[in-house]
Image (cartoon, rainbow, N blue to C red; front, side, top):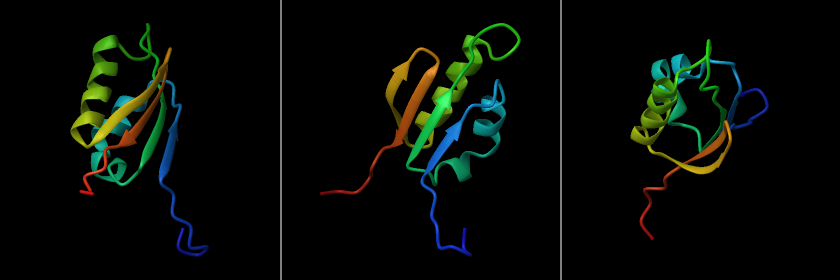
Length: 84
């Protein structure tokens, strides 16, 4: 937010099956975050297991690595490309 000079670096997403649409259609925007907290629902009427895997594959391709998996809850973190 420019008005308050706030820079957000974490996305929290719990949108009951809308995850795939967001991840698929907003890859460039998502790649600007450092962390993504994600709840996926791989069961009837929400997302299939294949769709959850597609979400995960896209996140990996745009530079994220999963650091927490607890049931349907996941935390992804941007892989640093800076050399030390």
